Image (cartoon, rainbow, N blue to C red; front, side, top):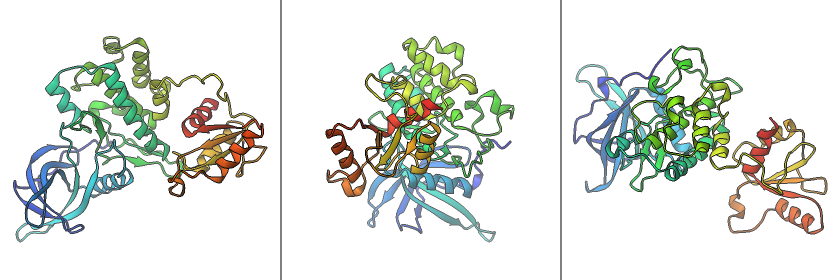
Length: 376
């Protein structure tokens, strides 16, 4: 089994060197190293203007591993607009001349610089446990991001204290998608690369041969516990959860997240629901999709085809139109066409039927996911 390997000496770049991106033409002046990981070394850098004036401070990450560079650039583009992902500014290969010897290709990423460093560094400096409210708020925000990743059939696989970054405002952002994977056509990604300090014994013993969404959940549970504990030096055990400064319900959520694999939350969505207190249906809400005819409008957090399959698996039927046969309309996000405030035709049809006395309920994407999972 392949573990995260140390960066090679080829990623050493001299202080004050100016690197120009052959892709964007932007130039970056290197500062001191920020740290190193399994696939490369990160440097503090300054983006320069044409007149050599500083534009902004950035993080320049260099690696000789083309595969991890591709993955991180891909997921960086995918989450370009996310407020909870370290932003990708530039991505390019750099050819290094080695005297008379062969050239080396160095793969570079220019990323947002998190002023607070990693959460590991942050907690080491402050040595202060986070309040339950703050920890819960930040973990919920990261779980919403992770739910998007899991909903698209991908896993991060490296949610460790070294890959969670702290902004100047104290909020958390996820970075380093170098070993993230998409599941393709039902083929689960192998658990071939990971940080051994933040996985379970099942991975270390190679009993767990595939990395699943529940393994990302384990790492999120560990992160939550570390915030409450006030340090990220090592994993938190089930026995130590009782010592965390939080209420019993939050302790129970952490125990389930980091507990036996078969009993964990199956993915980020389930853990998110537990943290938000949405485990049980609210009074007056629809209790089940069984026997219901469901229609969809607007973009969902998952593929429309997958959502329709979930309805069928829950014992319901799918309608492409909103008519008197429809019991439930799932309203996703707004398309660009309706950002001005205009409503879509399906939503207008649904509201007209409701006004006429038809028993049709409009629910959101999140409520739909809860009902679909409940049926499973």
